[in-house]
Length: 389
Image 1 (tube, rainbow, N blue to C red):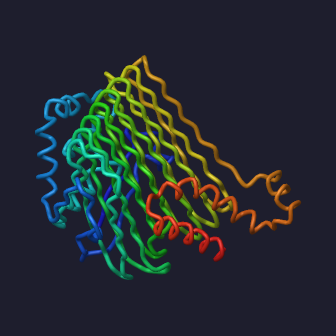
Image 2: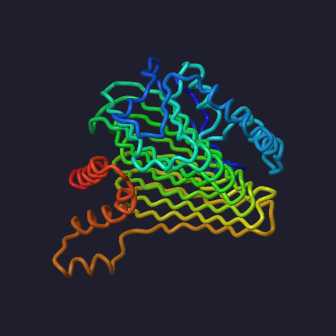
Image 3: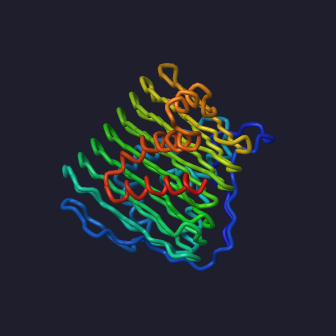
């Protein structure tokens, strides 16, 4: 039985908005506790299986003890209760401490992917998990990019369209000085599946994280990401796409925490809501004391294809520094009459126009998937949804 409080915002807003946090409940009790192994491991990458997660975290924490301890005590926002709740996490995650507690209770061990120092690895490490119907899965990964390394990790989770089940995954990133990590996640689970994906990361001096996330399947999905730009001139590029239709529900919490000076974060979220689907997006830029000269940009673009959808968006900026540049915004609207008229006047019917708009929006994300077969699978799935109506 799973009962977790997840996706808490860095600071609370009005309770009646029902956006401060979410709750995840599921009756799953027996889990497969693994992620399918990659078919090949590029040179310069080391993968260790069945590792106690705290061991990998402790090694990193000891290596960067002074900086991490400095961050742990520097809690000055007026949300002390929430911060105390998360202090047990060496690396904060978007969904929060309850996911770590669940994984510990279930004794889920980690797959540790390490890019060796100074290695620029061209080929991606690819994990493709084909999930059976009525299967419950928990998995966790720790990705360590040693100094001046470059690494790309691709993870996909797929099951038959109407499959039932539960799939929960936790991924933590440790990006050392000058390292560059690209993490790509593609979720195409069955419509009767519950799913959560929890991401957390720490980025040291001059490090860079590039996240590409695509949420397409699952009847109920929770997604969280918290990246701490801990070092000076650390950067984050984060692009997410989603398509919800039918009665799908998607709950998102993204936080860019900027601690180092001259850090740079960019979060872009593009989505489509159709039929009676529901989505909530919490996006936060958190400029901490010491982040002078930092820049943050957060944008969401949502296309609404039905009057019955429920869309809730809350962009937030927290600031303890004067010399920072934070921008945020949301564009939410329906398929415009002028665009429809333009397409209809050229012989494109309403349904085809709708399909073209959906594909165009999501292909800005899918084209960034570095594995052709997976990219084609994602595009085909979107077309399948469009044809089903």
